[in-house]
Image 1: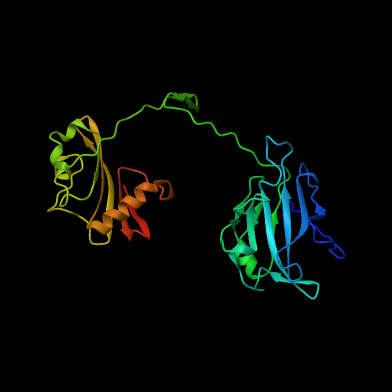
Image 2: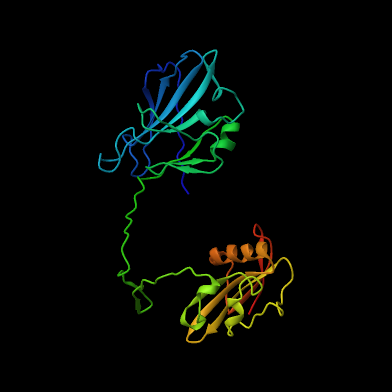
Length: 276
């Protein structure tokens, strides 16, 4: 990845919103991203460096609605640190928002990368702030996305096959409210000792007296249910069932396959013990 290096001399720059640097990088031009020095409440002890951002047009991004503001301490005419205290991250030393607005979002204590509307990435503000620095990655053009949300009639094509999603109705029922399990496609949460309905689905082959797992284990199992299908999400106890539900909700992370997965661990650290 290409980066942008900005080198400038602030000597004799008057702290009154004076622009001292502009970015020219690919399609990001000098009118898009500019750096300026501005006085703070106590002019002699602190100064602000503002990254002012605007789009190529108002319809893309209003001027000064996406600015980054950094607060620097000054001592004997030199920058002495980021924020009020050097070598320490502070929430208010790095903020984002609209110039002249009343509410700025504080970023200085955030420990994850942030991205502005224009697409500037602010790298790990907390860690970099503790080292009295601000790390920005400026893109070669304003980032934009076209998001389309459509209803259930949306057609999705791929691999020569066309799929039309069908709307389904989900009913939440107690086991005592299901007279005929084979009348439903079922998702059963909890083992057969807690949910008698599990034993009534013969395709699962799971009973309370014959529960095959130990404490700290759980299962995800798919079985036939007459002309329909049943999915069992169950553990040896309630905590193990929560572990199974966690894996099911994040199934893409666990590469599940086959009709059954045996799980082990805890809700915070589940693992797939076996697949079959």
